[in-house]
Amino acid sequence: MNELSRQFRLLVAILMLALALPVFAGDAAQGQDERMPSSDYIGQTLDGKKVLLSEHAGKVVVVSFWATWCPYCLKELPILNGMQKLAGKEQMHVVAINTEERAVFRKVVRALDKLDLSFAYDPDDRAQKAYKVNGIPHMMIIGRDGKILHVHRGYDDSMLDQIVAEINAALAAPAIPPAEAGTETIQAAVPAPASSADV
Image 1 (cartoon, rainbow, N blue to C red):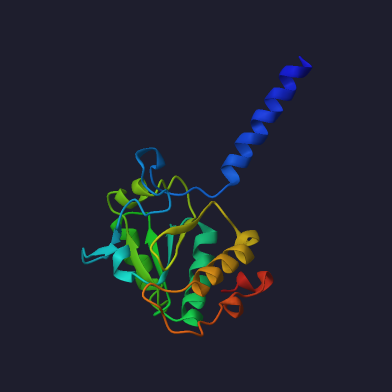
Image 2: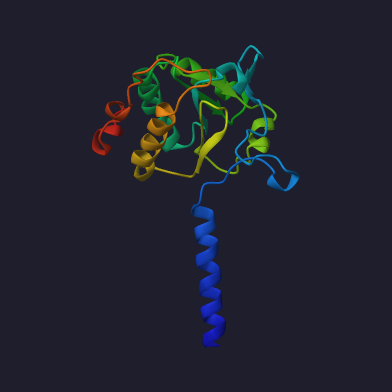
């Protein structure tokens, strides 16, 4: 019984570790680079225009899947807006993909019109399926080379410093083609945890 109990605890620990590690999109078994985006399509605008990752080639792209019923998602959007503003849209682009129906998306986009993010929604769950979005918030950080650097699922304020460091590292990487030198880091854009609730 003791040995069985130890094996069970080991199995639980392995499962917890596996869930904590970043998961990259792609199918390595078929020979595809697991860091390559599995779909160029990540959503569409209200007027039906497709939103494609390739539109932002050479930039750091942050894709955040979110919904209005997710309090952390709503708190995160202004923070991502501040990061994009400080880094500059020519260096970093944030695409916020709403996972709800069109009517909800239409209302919320009007309410968030002061944010300079690219807003889209995923009406047929196509992007969510491609990127294995099983819960939100769900964020992908894509490097200048177009490869997925980090995937975060179900995170909160405690991950903010790590996410900022990952985005700064992505911004520091050379662009393809080479970008202008002197990209600022986004450290100052992130409010202190106590004040972030007011954002």
